[in-house]
Image (cartoon, rainbow, N blue to C red; front, side):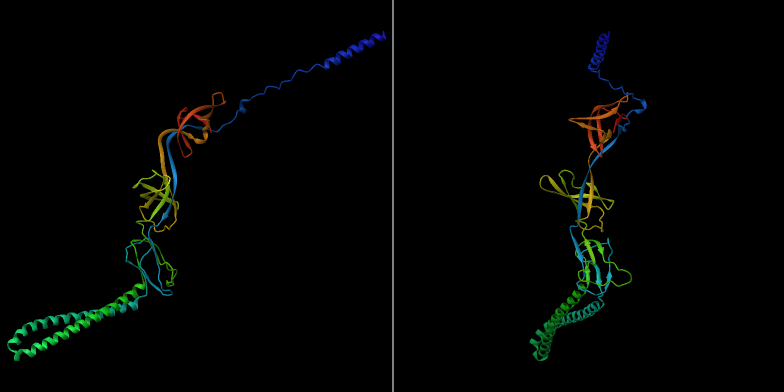
Length: 358
């Protein structure tokens, strides 16, 4: 009996151990539960209708074609007058500023009187010569007919004519000397004056600080005159961007200024140099001033468009993503047109008001 229980116990043990050797079936994870309030949120943008303008910013630089700096050669002298202000138009030869010329101008006045006196004497001497010549003409035949009566008178008239001619010659020489002296006085005045050497506009002018006199200093600019008729902004750009006579807007110092295209010079590799002239000269400009021109290169009116960043490029196709009626993210192929100002024209694939994922 004991032997039977031993055998039975061994069989039961073997049965349970063999069950442990059979591989277990793989357990699958529980299916996720999607709650309606846990759907993904997307930033969406609508297709809108409007105008697109494509622009290109072109840099330009100011170049005064003709400019002169006027300064006194003498230092330490009071500048008596400055006759112009910044922005004033001036003509070549116009007096702009001068040192004290009281002494020199008095010398000029005195010398003008000296010259006037000599010229009067020459005029009187020439009249006397003319009268003497007429007298000699009358006395010559008379002295031939009656030498005893008219010979002495003729000889006296001839001597007077010689003396008058000598005096006239002397006065002419004296006049030349005094005229040279007059020119020297004028030069002394000119050396103390500044006159415009060109037609132009006063760009800068020396200003008085407080009540102190303005004093000259060699090398110090008193006036700078620019010829704005030939001054220009220049820009290097591609050919066919501009045409002569075209009106543009040049921006600098946060302001806009109307200008026109005056000249286009051919360059290398299809590049050109364009010269722009301001329609209203700006006396505050200096050489090298930077400006910019916003050039319209293309435009379309009343078209559909989206922000460019909402459009995806995939190989040779353009597409957008959108959320369908089931709330699932989907894609759609579109065709595009003009790109401008971070916006892209939609040609096909979308209609006005449609929402796409941005």
